[in-house]
Image (cartoon, rainbow over all chains, first blue to last red; front, side, top):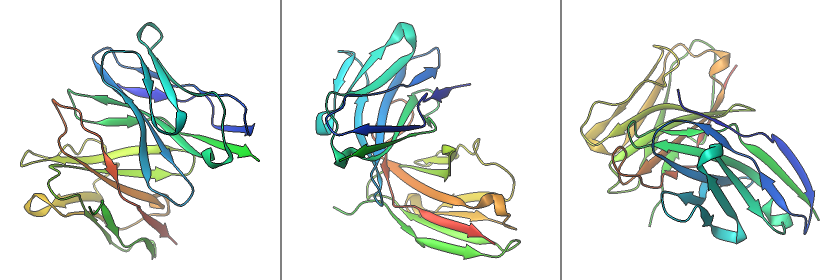
Length: 113
Length: 116
């Protein structure tokens, strides 16, 4: 069965620190990968996505993620976080066979000003 | 344009009662999804509808849960004989399509269900 694992459940950083959130998935077929973000009191919204092509994907607000097929990973990165990046981050994998989006457990990021 | 809307935003119910949660997807979106978000559990897939196809109910946790989508638009998630472990935020999402082609899912604000 497909699954998504996010290694960090709660991350606390100071402003300007670099961020990397881990995401690994288990699925042998073609996958499409997403990172969603949920800011406090707001809806889940798409941060970035990978369908094909360049494995380094750039999203909104300076975030990027790298798809490494051999490692079944899709880690999220940002060189310098801001207080406004405080949110919960979800990695998700979509199977075109089933149409389902499977989410990881989420990582809560707290950025201290 | 209007996004995905859900109602009610909050629902408190007594154990054993039935509840109905409503989702209005974005106009023109053929795929509709229900998820459950529990504290520390991430998002759990429940069910999805794609056009006129039979829904994928594989994520429903028990036969107390059911959902329907009328006219290919509005969807209702029903939980019968609610239990305390049903307490969670129920999220609805819609997209232009589902299987075969990948589209972004747009999420609603959720319904926070509390079973006392």
